[in-house]
Length: 277
Image 1 (spheres, one colour):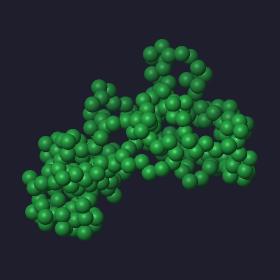
Image 2 (cartoon, helix red, strand yellow):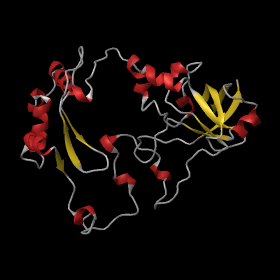
Image 3 (spheres, helix red, strand yellow):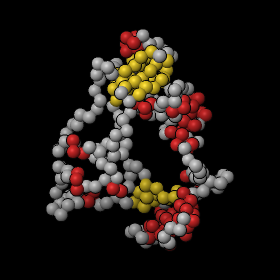
Image 4 (cartoon, one colour):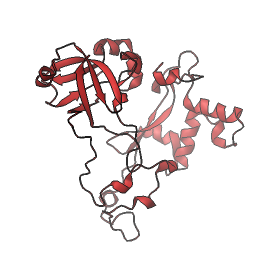
């Protein structure tokens, strides 16, 4: 029950990947894989496809043959309507389907996907709409040609340190910060400071400290040592807001501005000030 889930009026429990049939494409290779259902789901958990089909039916959505399919039927239909006439049966027999293009296509021997086959170094972002017509970030300020774009927040006199909000070893994402074993390993929200920075601030191991910038303030505990570089503070997480004193989580300090050109995940480089609470 993450903070996001607690905002919902209705929570529909979903199945985990061993509890439903699904199709996968892996990172780092070009194969399609089938992940079969191995165990029944507990309680009232239902696959996403079932929930989606039920919502379409009950809300008077447009009829489509796919809305009545099981997960296996849907995968089979998708494969056959792609370039795999053998469908799910072939995939189960072969265990994976290799989608790697031939050598010439994969290495652009015959050119790129333009009529003239040439590669474009200079993008025309105005002619490349964002996916799903979503908002675009400040693409007008991006370099015309590939180059370094200095958009990080640099240290200032009022905010002399740089904050890194990296993932912890125990919290892959926010769903893991509800897991008792992961919470036990991480202990509490901390900020790692270099020993020299901590000494200059009068901060010692375990002290309660306040990280701040023009966006707000966050209270954590100090972890002093030589792990971070001097001038850099590392706050691993991501902890829920409720785990922080005052209820402000680490993203209080990060920007919510749209990233260029098409939005999506931003890897923030943030300037902050640190003081002992």
